Length: 53
Image 1 (cartoon, rainbow, N blue to C red):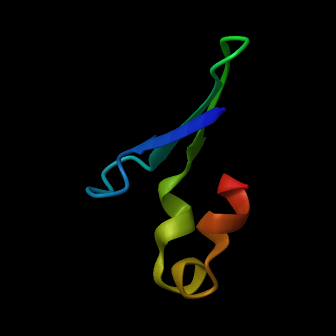
Image 2: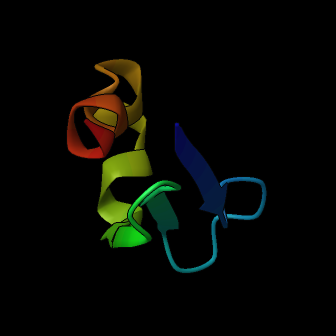
């Protein structure tokens, strides 16, 4: 099972942290979607979704 969670997407002060963990092995990865991905043009084009993937 893979668990995914985000922090910061409700209050965009410094971007969004995405964390992913594979439960069986304990592998964990996280990255930040920078605040620039949420400006009007980038948000309209949903660039934050590409960065999350």
